[in-house]
Length: 312
Image (cartoon, rainbow, N blue to C red; front, side):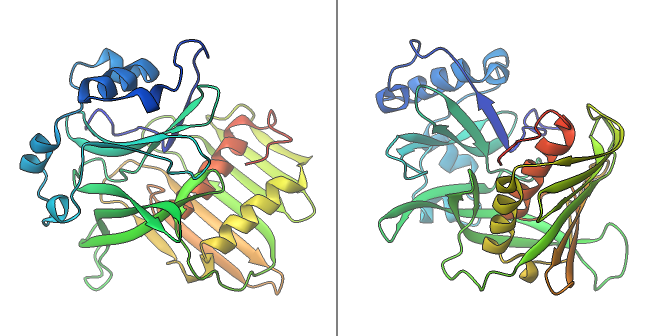
């Protein structure tokens, strides 16, 4: 498995404010970018296989249905991708394979690392900064697989080419919705996570509109057993707004990666009219919007009951 196989979607990186002054703005060369990334990520620093290759090198190795040339891809770009006035970094890293990622400047020299590569074994996953209505977004290309139900056989997949646009919203990168649908009133949001081949946290968590949270820790969590707590209303409201923004009713009911021994998340949304939407996601890679929901609920579930006033 590639070294970046288990890079979390989000890694928060802190370091002293005097060490880097306007660091992303000051990056000029490929070597500058590589040094910067190794300074803020110890995994990059300790592995000699990590590098920032030149755009010319990448073009030779990553044709990817002609997208690299067609999109005029670069090995790295500086852009305010979160539209907050601060310069961020979008790059393609070489690390026993290739992955696309961004480093977002949150101010005061605090940075977040976001990986856009969902498939550990696939090099052709690109993001390219674009402008839509005076705001910065990312267009994304990736190769993926989905269960081939036509064959009615387990572990049978068909290949797909995915083109989409990502925007920074709800403190994450999710699929851009230019025409937000009518907001459905959500009464409850539940998630169940399974074990995997490793130490994946397994728990059940249900959040209801009133602010109550019902939790059952099963394994690899800070607390096991059942408990009930009152959370800040903002916690539920933020997750409900995210679910509405990604138009969760329109998403598929089943997603699955084409490798084994991963974790399954089952997400259930209950609406005011008592209708439900249930999504089963093996590998938890269905969409970027779903990954954002999983990430926020995983933070709650794995740290329960520490983050009782957590605002995702």
